[in-house]
Length: 215
Image (cartoon, rainbow, N blue to C red; front, side, top):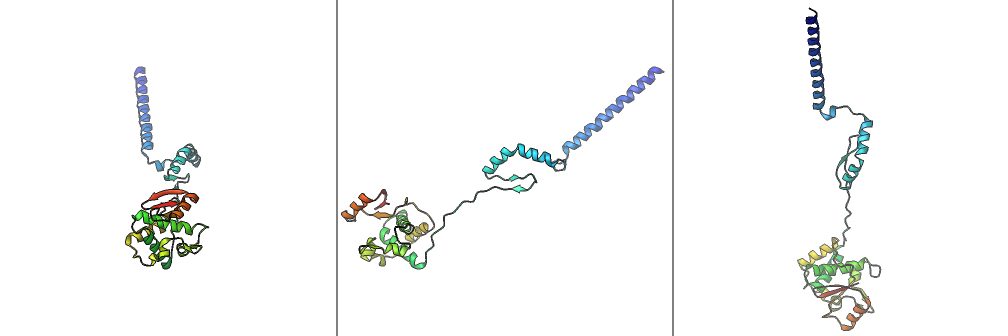
Protein backbone atom coordinates (compact mmCIF):
# COMPACT_ATOMS: atom_id res chain seq x y z
CA UNK A 1 0.00 0.00 0.00
CA UNK A 2 2.77 2.39 0.98
CA UNK A 3 4.77 1.53 -2.12
CA UNK A 4 1.77 2.19 -4.35
CA UNK A 5 1.25 5.62 -2.76
CA UNK A 6 4.90 6.57 -3.25
CA UNK A 7 4.79 5.39 -6.87
CA UNK A 8 1.63 7.41 -7.53
CA UNK A 9 3.21 10.51 -6.02
CA UNK A 10 6.33 10.14 -8.17
CA UNK A 11 4.18 9.69 -11.29
CA UNK A 12 2.19 12.84 -10.49
CA UNK A 13 5.40 14.81 -10.00
CA UNK A 14 6.74 13.62 -13.35
CA UNK A 15 3.51 14.58 -15.11
CA UNK A 16 3.59 18.05 -13.47
CA UNK A 17 7.25 18.64 -14.46
CA UNK A 18 6.58 17.51 -18.02
CA UNK A 19 3.61 19.88 -18.28
CA UNK A 20 5.61 22.79 -16.86
CA UNK A 21 8.43 22.15 -19.33
CA UNK A 22 5.95 22.18 -22.23
CA UNK A 23 4.42 25.47 -21.08
CA UNK A 24 7.86 27.14 -20.81
CA UNK A 25 8.92 25.85 -24.20
CA UNK A 26 5.72 27.17 -25.78
CA UNK A 27 6.33 30.61 -24.18
CA UNK A 28 9.85 30.77 -25.59
CA UNK A 29 8.60 29.76 -29.03
CA UNK A 30 5.97 32.52 -29.02
CA UNK A 31 8.53 35.06 -27.92
CA UNK A 32 10.90 34.08 -30.74
CA UNK A 33 8.16 34.23 -33.33
CA UNK A 34 6.79 37.65 -32.28
CA UNK A 35 7.53 40.50 -34.75
CA UNK A 36 10.61 42.48 -33.79
CA UNK A 37 8.57 45.67 -33.54
CA UNK A 38 6.52 44.09 -30.71
CA UNK A 39 9.52 43.14 -28.57
CA UNK A 40 9.87 45.83 -25.90
CA UNK A 41 13.23 47.65 -25.79
CA UNK A 42 14.15 50.63 -23.69
CA UNK A 43 15.55 53.90 -25.01
CA UNK A 44 18.78 53.23 -23.14
CA UNK A 45 19.17 49.89 -24.92
CA UNK A 46 18.56 51.54 -28.27
CA UNK A 47 21.17 54.21 -27.54
CA UNK A 48 23.65 51.56 -26.48
CA UNK A 49 23.09 49.63 -29.69
CA UNK A 50 23.34 52.82 -31.72
CA UNK A 51 26.63 53.74 -30.05
CA UNK A 52 27.99 50.24 -30.66
CA UNK A 53 27.13 50.57 -34.34
CA UNK A 54 28.34 54.17 -34.60
CA UNK A 55 31.44 53.33 -36.61
CA UNK A 56 29.40 51.39 -39.14
CA UNK A 57 26.95 54.26 -39.50
CA UNK A 58 29.78 56.72 -40.14
CA UNK A 59 31.08 54.50 -42.93
CA UNK A 60 27.61 54.29 -44.40
CA UNK A 61 27.22 58.04 -44.33
CA UNK A 62 30.54 58.44 -46.12
CA UNK A 63 29.09 56.34 -48.90
CA UNK A 64 25.82 58.29 -48.94
CA UNK A 65 23.79 55.36 -47.58
CA UNK A 66 20.54 55.96 -45.70
CA UNK A 67 20.63 55.33 -41.96
CA UNK A 68 18.25 55.61 -39.00
CA UNK A 69 18.48 57.93 -36.04
CA UNK A 70 17.95 56.62 -32.50
CA UNK A 71 14.42 57.99 -32.59
CA UNK A 72 13.70 55.78 -35.60
CA UNK A 73 13.54 58.71 -38.05
CA UNK A 74 15.13 57.96 -41.42
CA UNK A 75 18.24 60.00 -42.12
CA UNK A 76 19.74 60.34 -45.58
CA UNK A 77 23.19 61.83 -46.14
CA UNK A 78 24.07 63.13 -49.57
CA UNK A 79 26.52 65.41 -51.33
CA UNK A 80 25.48 68.36 -53.43
CA UNK A 81 27.61 68.67 -56.53
CA UNK A 82 28.39 72.21 -57.47
CA UNK A 83 27.76 72.98 -61.10
CA UNK A 84 29.76 75.59 -62.84
CA UNK A 85 27.64 78.59 -63.70
CA UNK A 86 27.13 78.91 -67.45
CA UNK A 87 28.00 82.15 -69.24
CA UNK A 88 24.96 84.10 -70.37
CA UNK A 89 25.28 86.47 -73.34
CA UNK A 90 22.76 88.73 -74.98
CA UNK A 91 22.02 88.31 -78.70
CA UNK A 92 24.61 90.87 -79.82
CA UNK A 93 27.43 89.38 -77.74
CA UNK A 94 26.50 85.86 -78.82
CA UNK A 95 26.62 86.88 -82.49
CA UNK A 96 30.10 88.39 -82.07
CA UNK A 97 31.40 85.25 -80.32
CA UNK A 98 30.01 82.96 -83.02
CA UNK A 99 31.47 85.12 -85.78
CA UNK A 100 34.97 85.28 -84.34
CA UNK A 101 34.95 81.51 -83.80
CA UNK A 102 33.73 80.87 -87.34
CA UNK A 103 36.21 83.28 -88.91
CA UNK A 104 39.18 82.01 -86.85
CA UNK A 105 38.41 78.28 -86.77
CA UNK A 106 35.76 77.58 -89.40
CA UNK A 107 38.02 74.95 -90.98
CA UNK A 108 38.81 73.26 -87.63
CA UNK A 109 36.97 70.40 -85.96
CA UNK A 110 34.46 71.19 -83.25
CA UNK A 111 37.09 71.03 -80.49
CA UNK A 112 39.21 73.49 -82.46
CA UNK A 113 36.27 75.88 -82.53
CA UNK A 114 35.58 75.25 -78.86
CA UNK A 115 39.17 76.22 -78.06
CA UNK A 116 38.83 79.59 -79.78
CA UNK A 117 35.62 80.28 -77.87
CA UNK A 118 37.42 79.25 -74.66
CA UNK A 119 40.20 81.77 -75.31
CA UNK A 120 37.71 84.60 -75.84
CA UNK A 121 35.85 83.76 -72.63
CA UNK A 122 39.13 83.32 -70.74
CA UNK A 123 40.05 86.86 -71.73
CA UNK A 124 36.68 88.19 -70.63
CA UNK A 125 37.30 86.65 -67.20
CA UNK A 126 40.90 87.91 -66.96
CA UNK A 127 41.61 91.33 -65.46
CA UNK A 128 44.22 92.11 -68.13
CA UNK A 129 41.55 92.15 -70.84
CA UNK A 130 38.19 93.90 -71.37
CA UNK A 131 35.16 92.49 -69.57
CA UNK A 132 32.82 91.78 -72.50
CA UNK A 133 33.03 89.55 -75.57
CA UNK A 134 32.60 92.45 -77.99
CA UNK A 135 35.34 94.52 -76.33
CA UNK A 136 37.72 91.53 -76.28
CA UNK A 137 37.13 90.68 -79.94
CA UNK A 138 37.48 94.28 -81.18
CA UNK A 139 40.29 95.28 -78.82
CA UNK A 140 43.24 97.06 -80.42
CA UNK A 141 46.80 97.63 -79.25
CA UNK A 142 48.48 100.65 -80.80
CA UNK A 143 45.81 100.69 -83.48
CA UNK A 144 46.31 97.01 -84.34
CA UNK A 145 43.43 94.54 -83.95
CA UNK A 146 44.02 91.53 -81.72
CA UNK A 147 42.38 89.14 -84.19
CA UNK A 148 43.14 89.06 -87.90
CA UNK A 149 39.50 88.49 -89.04
CA UNK A 150 38.65 91.81 -87.38
CA UNK A 151 41.51 93.57 -89.16
CA UNK A 152 40.54 92.10 -92.54
CA UNK A 153 36.79 92.49 -92.01
CA UNK A 154 36.23 88.77 -92.55
CA UNK A 155 34.33 88.58 -89.27
CA UNK A 156 31.46 90.42 -90.97
CA UNK A 157 31.36 88.19 -94.05
CA UNK A 158 31.29 84.68 -92.60
CA UNK A 159 28.22 82.49 -92.43
CA UNK A 160 28.11 80.87 -89.00
CA UNK A 161 27.74 77.09 -89.24
CA UNK A 162 25.75 74.79 -87.02
CA UNK A 163 28.97 73.16 -85.84
CA UNK A 164 30.28 76.53 -84.71
CA UNK A 165 27.03 77.23 -82.84
CA UNK A 166 27.37 73.89 -81.06
CA UNK A 167 30.98 74.60 -80.11
CA UNK A 168 30.04 78.03 -78.75
CA UNK A 169 27.18 76.51 -76.78
CA UNK A 170 29.61 74.03 -75.22
CA UNK A 171 31.89 76.88 -74.18
CA UNK A 172 29.03 78.92 -72.76
CA UNK A 173 27.85 75.83 -70.89
CA UNK A 174 31.16 75.73 -69.00
CA UNK A 175 33.20 73.25 -71.06
CA UNK A 176 36.80 74.43 -71.17
CA UNK A 177 39.59 72.36 -72.72
CA UNK A 178 41.99 75.29 -73.18
CA UNK A 179 44.14 74.82 -70.05
CA UNK A 180 43.67 78.52 -69.37
CA UNK A 181 44.94 79.71 -72.78
CA UNK A 182 44.69 83.45 -73.45
CA UNK A 183 46.34 83.49 -76.88
CA UNK A 184 46.39 81.38 -80.03
CA UNK A 185 48.13 81.72 -83.36
CA UNK A 186 48.60 79.86 -86.63
CA UNK A 187 52.37 79.72 -87.11
CA UNK A 188 51.95 78.91 -90.79
CA UNK A 189 50.03 82.10 -91.47
CA UNK A 190 51.34 84.45 -88.78
CA UNK A 191 54.01 87.08 -89.22
CA UNK A 192 57.39 85.76 -88.03
CA UNK A 193 57.93 88.79 -85.79
CA UNK A 194 54.61 88.19 -84.09
CA UNK A 195 55.37 84.52 -83.56
CA UNK A 196 58.77 85.42 -82.08
CA UNK A 197 56.97 87.59 -79.53
CA UNK A 198 54.68 84.64 -78.69
CA UNK A 199 57.65 82.31 -78.23
CA UNK A 200 59.66 84.73 -76.10
CA UNK A 201 56.94 86.19 -73.89
CA UNK A 202 54.26 83.51 -73.48
CA UNK A 203 54.03 79.98 -72.16
CA UNK A 204 53.34 77.43 -74.88
CA UNK A 205 50.57 75.04 -73.87
CA UNK A 206 49.67 72.76 -76.78
CA UNK A 207 48.79 72.61 -80.45
CA UNK A 208 45.44 71.63 -81.88
CA UNK A 209 44.66 71.59 -85.59
CA UNK A 210 46.23 74.64 -87.17
CA UNK A 211 46.58 76.67 -83.97
CA UNK A 212 49.12 76.85 -81.15
CA UNK A 213 47.81 77.94 -77.74
CA UNK A 214 49.64 80.05 -75.15
CA UNK A 215 49.10 81.85 -71.88
